[in-house]
Structures are given as structure tokens and as C-alpha cells.
Image 1 (cartoon, rainbow, N blue to C red):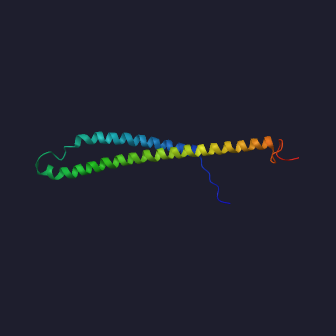
Image 2 (cartoon, one colour):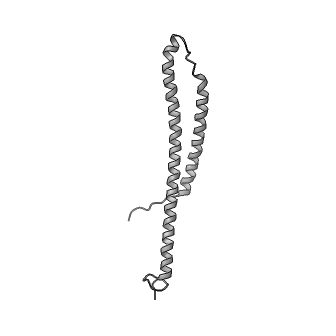
Image 3 (cartoon, rainbow, N blue to C red):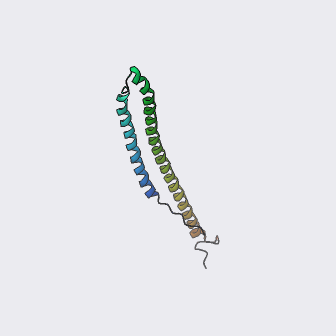
Amino acid sequence: MGQRYYVDPHRIEALAKQLEEIGTLTRSMTEEFLDELAPTVKWPGTEGEFAEKARPQEQKERQTTKDTMLSIRDALVGITDATLGQVRMMKDTRDRNIEDVEQGTNRINTDGLDGGPGGHGRR
């Protein structure tokens, strides 16, 4: 017989809650970072040789940094949402299976194993 599979939805939920907290923190860090980044847009200057050379590279790096921060945030949110979805699915499956077993047990108690009246088919 194969190995037994065991899952603790409550433990996974607790870990997912931690992921949600990390996601919330990441969102606020990203917003704060982008707010702090905005005033630095003119740092390389707007005129002159240095500005002409530095500005395109600075803009590229700025956009790459923004994209990276947003991607990290989105990945954490996606992982958290998927994990919570899996926990809901596990709980639903578990609850449905428990209900099915209880219904089967009730039928056995009512009809017996052999379909006769009551008991477990014993005489």
C-alpha cells in the first residue's frame, strides 16, 4: 500500500496568513518606495551633456527597479491567493468525504450490511 498522505489545513492557513502579512508589508513598501522615488526624477539634470548621457540610463534603471518591485509584490499576492485557494479546496474535499462516510455509516446502521433491517448484518 502507498504512503499515507496527510495535510493540516489549519497549519497551511496560518502560514498563508503570514504570507498575507508579508504581502501587505510588500505593498506598503512598494508604495513608499515609489513615492520616495518620484522626487529624484530630475537628479541627472534636465540640460547639458551629463543629463543627455545619464538620463536615458537612469530612466531605464528607474523603470527596471519599479517593475522588479511590482513583480515581487504581485508574486507574493499570487502565491498567497493560490495557497488560500488550495486550503479551501482541501477543506471542501475533506468535509465532503467525511459527509459521504457519515452517510454511508448511517445507511449501514439503518439497512444493515446485507440490506436487511438494521444492525451490521450480524445475527
